Image (cartoon, rainbow, N blue to C red; front, side, top):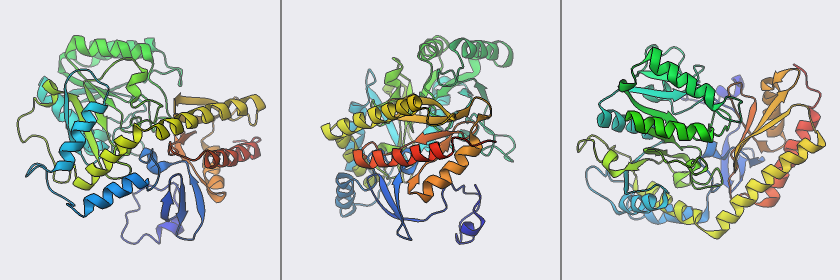
Length: 427
């Protein structure tokens, strides 16, 4: 969406930065935010999946404030600092993967992905990567080539770091079967590329920007065996699906398999910029000393916030709130279906608390134009929503999992009323 007047008031900011909502926020509390004009909104965006624990969680704020009085920064490659060591020890204990784990901290999800590619290349001596249609892994040159979508990420960039190959993403949420994906993988390795040149396969257990679609469980198991057989590193991108978003600590727990490398970011530190690459020690310790690192990676304040985040996630109030959120979304959606509030109401995609509401009409197809109108109307009524999916026709629910029940109910009522009002929308 292009808001000409609003862009004119963004001095010094590139117009190449996209914008969903032309408002300027001033502050937030849990699942609510306020703009500079004083207007109040219920936040179903959550910083695009960064705020699973809401805005300004008091425990996280306290951790940030305390650390800021002790040390604001030190490059871990130059000298160790305690918050980094403390958090990494807690993180590898928290991640439910077998064996001894290790890893590194990064600044963001794209940097986590970049470093995972480095580890996989160094370990295997290969360069090729297989990714999936609809996937999203970042905006840097290497990660953008992994994305399963050209517009707008790859336009005008020319040749990108690779080689990268894409196959269909199988899911019950999109109708693509395990068999289709297996056939595509077999064709790829028989016709397009030598399997012995593939270093890694990267996949989101639940597509984020692709529309909240859960990877087919049987295909996930096939993929795990396939990678093991051919010496390929299996990378799970849990940058958006991790830290409780799917109703479990990590989405791979829904699939019954483990990755070789796990990519983390977004909600890892309650709003502070932080990411991580975690894997078995024999893999992540393989690169030569000095080959991994970064000036700001694992900043002390971000690490302190991340330690607080892990503590909160294991508390009974969070577990209870997350469960209530999950149950409310499912219950409400099924009520809307039973009441037939609109012919545009498609599938409830995803799993657990990571849900998308598809807008799809039996006659007109994907509701891309409808969702554009809903985003505006919802914002005017005090509800912030986020689109997703190949056709931008799926409402991506990234509400803080700590949202108060009455605020969640109010937000869903606003959405329900709007869906009813647009029931007769025609393309």
